Length: 203
Image (cartoon, rainbow, N blue to C red; front, side, top):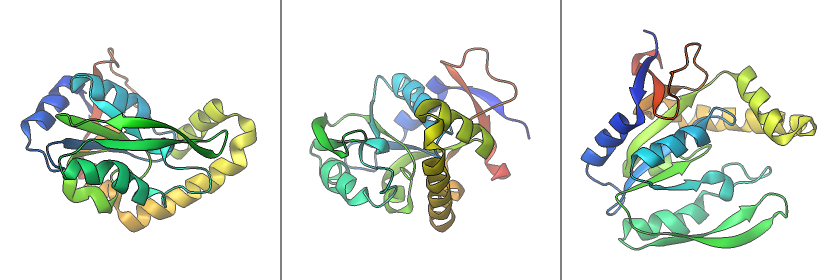
């Protein structure tokens, strides 16, 4: 089956119609490999959810700590939300290589967590919706080097190998509720409001 267009508003309506599973919050994870298009999708979906806050896993991860940072997200964000309290986390600065300013995460109807490993097995039971962005390796690497510069190529090779290992072990893609074509051949005419949804049967 071919990808079909769906509006972010339609997806948001389905999410908001579901009961929260992380305290009073409907937790949405937008996962997939680096360069897949997660940030753009998350921004459009968050807007459709009524300007929901986005927590980026890049605020926790680093080049040398791709997936091991999860306990800090649990302690500072997910745990408090699950208990019905606001969260608060400290952003990691990739340039200075140290923790930077603090960010508040108030209780809200929905929260979007965006980034590599955001839908990992450890949070699956608390997710209202797990989104997987499917994009080919060549295009992902091209996007990454446009963003980070050609000098980052060795780091990107290491990063991609590590995330491949994580996804193979975690089987994140197999648990996705929504599959998205991150580089469709026939892009929607209104990409700010519409995305191309892949059938789950093609996983």
